[in-house]
Length: 91
Image (cartoon, rainbow, N blue to C red; front, side, top):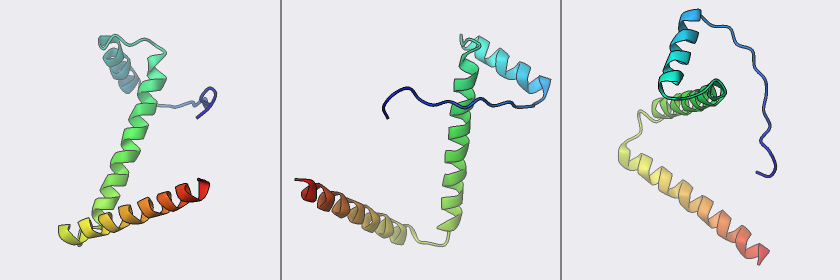
């Protein structure tokens, strides 16, 4: 990425209890008011990651570990082959 990261302003509504709990937690960690946005962004990224992992686990629940590993290995091989072909074309 080049240049400063773009940001979006967001207005959220939540309970005073949650607000107080989060601000108390951040304060106890030595974080300042400006760190609230960073904390929320990180929390959102982790939530999306965990949701994606859960969905992937559900989608492949009926696949044996050996078959799943074979599928992963084939996908990695395909990506590597494509990468090396593109790299060779640029040379």
